[in-house]
Structure formats: C-alpha cells, structure tokens
Length: 519
Image (cartoon, rainbow, N blue to C red):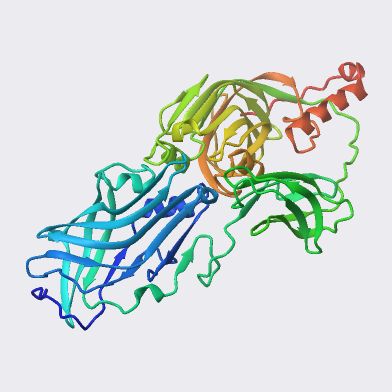
C-alpha cells in the first residue's frame, strides 16, 4: 500500500538522486568507438554501476503534498571519450516541480567531437512526469521512483547534439529527505578507464596492426589519450624493457602512431608493446613466434577445379555498426556502388572464380563497394571488392578498405583478410549451385585495424550468405587446389613461382582429368 506523501522534516533519512542519464550514451562512451570512461566526483558515486547517485545538498523547499518546490543535489558525473576530445560534465542536479510535472536542472560543461563547447549553469536538461512516479514514504523521507525523463531542446547541446529534443532519457529516482553534511567530501569513482577497484587508471589505450609477429617483422602501434601535440613519445617492448622508437609526436587529438621492427633476438612468447609519453602510457599485448620458415613442395600435379560465374554475396558487415551510423550520434548514411544495399545488408553479384568440388575449396571475387559515413563526413569507411575464400568448413572474407576514423586519421588497405567464416553446416546444393547460408563472421586482427579500431579482433560481425554457380572444368589456382602460403599475396606469388618452374612443361603434362564430383 502506498502511503500518502508528507513534507519531510529537516532531519532523518538523507535525500539523494539516482540517474543513469542515458543507457545508449553510457554504452557509446565505454565502447570500442569512443573508448572512454565515466567518473563521478564532488559527492556523486556509482560510476561503476551506471546508476549515478547524488546526495541532497541543502534543505528542500519541495512540498510532497502539492509536489511543488525544488530540491538540490551535489556532485558531478563526467563522460569522456575519443582521447578526451569528447567531454561532458553534468554537475549539481536539482529537481524543480510545479505539481504533476517537474524538470531536472544541472550545470553543464561539455566539448563535442567537432570541437564545439557548451558551458552553462542551470540548464533544464529533462522534463519529468511525476504523475507516473512510484511514490513511497518512510522514516520521514519521500521517494519518487522511476520517473520518466525526456530530453529538452535546452538539454540537446549538453550531449554534443547527439540526441534530439523529445528523446527518452533514463528514468530518475529521487528521495526528498535530509541534506548531507559536506557532500563534496565523498570520494569519487570511475568506470571504463579505471581499474577494478574504481581507482582511475591511465586513460591512454593502444591498438596493434597485428597481434602475432615473428622476429624481424614490423608492427604498428596506435595510441591515444596523450596530450595535444605532445612530443617526445617513445615505443618500448617489455618484459625486459627495450626502446624501439623515439621522437614520436601526438596529433591535436592526443593520438600517436609508430611502426617498429621486432628485434630479431627477441625470445618467442608473450610480450607487451608500450607507447610512452610524459604522463600516460598506452600498451597492448603481442605474441612473438619463432622464426618463420617456408618449405618446398613436391612437383606440381595437374589439377582441375570448376569455374564459378555469376556468384552472389549478401553481407551486412556489422549490424551494430549500421545502427550506430544511422543513429542519433553519427547521423550518417550507408550507400553502395556497383552493389545493392537494402538498409540492412549489401548484395554483390556477378562474382567470378573457381571451386574444387572434390577438395571443397575455392574463391569468388566481386566488384563494387559499400560506404558508411557519419559525423558530417568525419567518419568514413568504404569496403570494396570482396573476395570469398572457402576451405572446407572455414572461409575468409578478403576486402579492400579505405577508412577515416574520428580523429581524422586516414588509411587505405588492400587485400585485407577482414573476417573469418564458420561454414560448418551452412552448405547446401541446388542443381549446380552451391550456397552457404548465414555463415557466422568474426572480425580478424587485420580487419580490426582496417576498421579504424572501432571493434576488437574476435568481435562478431553480420553473417554472410553466398552462392557459387558451378560450371565447367578449369585449371586449379592457388585457392582451389595448388599449394598456398596462407595469404592472398602469398598465394599469387606461389602460383607464379610454380608456373615459372614448370614452364611450358606444365602444359605438356599428360592430362588426367578428374571426374568432376557431383555438386
């Protein structure tokens, strides 16, 4: 039974306000795009839980009987991302009520990712529907729980204009009770860029171009969270510290990149690469293998596969990324050229290649691209010319990528093994067409780098569906039967070497056509 609200006395249960602000904004801040963190201070707590608590800071003029008046709370919640480029602080929230309705007011200090700033005291961030609140009274205090909150036009700039007026925010719960003595002395907390205890940790983070290397290989380390235009950064490899590069300078957004060579005498095993500045260190684990070797194969045997013409590929790249691009933060779009996009998937057609039905391996290549743009063109990702490589129960999606990340760093990569495919149980045959339906796709380490670091290696991507119409016999290539080195470039090289060694004699070999396996 809900008790009738009464005006609380000046002493008793402490008043407080609990609010998560907006769940999607929290996820964006701590996710793989913003790669940021959340901190509370000045008496506010709850950064680790996502429900921030602000203590009542003064005697309330809020009358619970009429639901009119105001109550003040203390503390700050701060959201930072993109190496500090995005920075939103909400301080000293208060509830101002006029009966069945109320507003949530706070002081705002924010910087958006486009370089704009918004600093203003007493911003009416949200309207609150007190008539929908769950009201309880106990020990001289009154609590209004799960009050629906809606973003106002005045509150839009507080979030860098990511959202529009009328968007739902997280519900608000507040208790009108006694003020807390010296609320600003309560220790603050952090999440995202913090350690497990809530103590803020170094906000700098690093990504590597590859996660596994051999001695003598090169690797690119990219880090952000350093000072704007900070100079004198260096790269080290640990366990036993060794300096690999010096004199590195961060850009205006605090991001820095360096390509280094792994020492040839570095022992095999787990190591750490560090990008080190004056006040921050970004690090990432890397595995060093033994020296790479290549063996010589036996003489080439005549091999026949079947030609593939008119192949199709349907793939959405990433459902999560599409939602982000089309959402209120990126406010972007998806477009296709030489392919068809329906808003959730892109379909490429006219693919050509070969497939060995006896060995269950082959490849089809497609022309055309899909482009993702957002944040007024700052974010730009184009994936083009996909190639589907099949090897029994597994496969690989190889693509060309042109990207520009949120810091304006541009990169172009060709022949990237972007995603691994699990083809187990996904194959079916109809007439002379083989189809793999809904094959799970997983982002590779190389794909993560080409994806501008938005997602980590191992992230699930959208499933892929593709069909190979099988035609007449063709000679095998590196993807459908000849010995391969494991990479697209290596496959082409191996094929060229074999043809060179065998010369015209390859064509003179007495051909023994294999009976084509039934598809």
